[in-house]
Length: 309
Image (cartoon, rainbow, N blue to C red; front, side, top):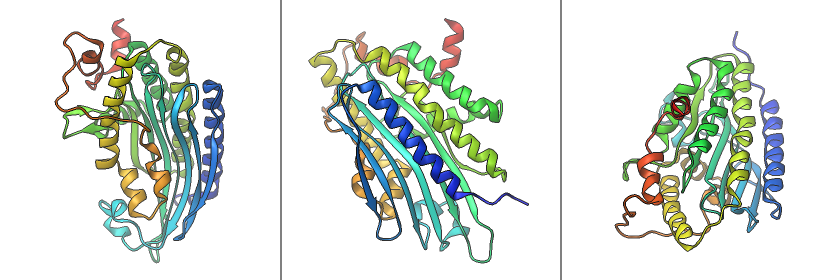
């Protein structure tokens, strides 16, 4: 018989994850602190938003926990689960986005989440999802290799092929079709994860969630003191536009949050504070700006790059 999902255990883990990530990021920043905003959702549930602004490293960042519920699944969650239409549901997760000041420090996003629905006269149906991805403006091979090595180590206990599958899923998901380019250098993405072994499925989500800070913090430490000027800042703001385009057009979490009546301020926390668009911009050939799309935003296998070095 399949194990029953333990929603309370998942919730306690997610709250502890939010706290530990905020502590680590505040220590990296040195100046900024996370303000806490607790909110309730009239339709059911609520959450805790933790936001940092104008730190020494992070221009804006948020690490949000939410636990929401309802009587009928939102359309974005039933598109490929029509049998759950009309079922009571609950969803919880931690989602974060970090936008540093320094253009040499990448933007990063991470999310781990848990859904459970209970159709009439049936056992609960659960699934886990999550992952993380990296969006550099000026790339470094060693950062990309480190990022993917940590991601692989998080997946390895759960199957030899899992990192490859979730890496490809991330590359496919975080892709701007209208631009015909990846959003960043990828990482992990998975959804609808349910093997019937709740404890093992939960352990996978924890492994991914716990590994995020181990993947991101060393990159921030290496790059946060690099000098930069107006040229780098202008390019960063221009490339942030791609981030906004993806989140507002394609991101399933954003769509789910808005369709389920979530808190708009928390949902759109992922957007950067400053951004710009420039008509028909083309970087100078041979420049570091051109190298971003020519070398880094190519969906390459960064572990193979490491083997070649």
